[in-house]
Image 1 (cartoon, rainbow, N blue to C red):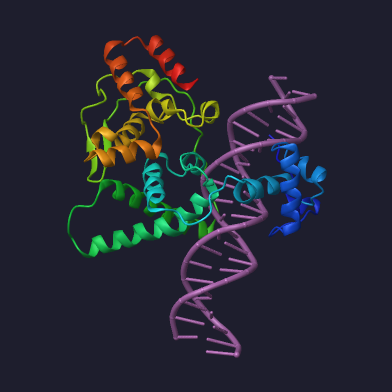
Image 2 (image 1 turned 90 degrees about the horizontal axis):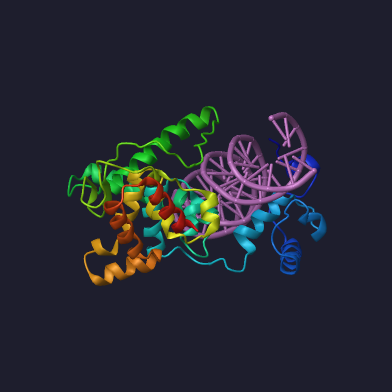
Length: 285
DNA sequence: AACTCACGCAACCGCGGATGT
DNA sequence: TACATCCGCGGTTGCGTGAGT
């Protein structure tokens, strides 16, 4: 497995981009399109490495990038998606049109973590209404992060979670969903006794490439049953308090809930894993 | 006015999967 | 099959800037 040499090793420019460099990159991509990043700098007349060009384009120069502050709606969606997906910033960004993974990652690390820490502190000092388990889950993650950061100050270690892949073993599921009141266990909806293999079809970058808005992936392709269930229940308009909230939830993730119903009917009606595998595949095409 | 400090964000780094030869 | 290269990702760094003293 090789690795492209970094800029410093081949004497290329580093650091902030100049207006001239931006112009060269924009002009080249406008006339030749994205891609072939390794050869792009030379062709475009840039003394940058391909990775740097790609990063600059993806995170800053792309015309479809949304500028301005993260809205409360986007903030809420980031928190929800992070509870489901963890630090998979590119997947989270995929649900926020115009936002980049880098931007969301920065926003999370600066604004949201700080806010959740403040919430944690305030709720520790004042015992009031029981805290949402969603918030608790995020706080637990943050505490873990703190521990990792403590270690990182003495020795920088990197943890690379395995990329999700298609797996087949059937796990014992624990139905749960997360709403404003917390995580609810064993609620009606999914079936706890039997979980077909296809339920464990994981998030996959390949699948995602087939269709960025492939809604089947969120419905049936979570890393595990909990993820699927959280995702579905967390955004299910049918479980919102009123029609306005439901419409907003549906619009926010642009998710056709008839697929969910169809899926559940299918689950009840047919335990043939082969047929259901095909059903899942059909959703992913 | 000068200095310090904390914060936000753009950019870099290294890893590993995907793809090509 | 083995190796090289490309590409995209998440983690991290470091600089610019504004607030506070």
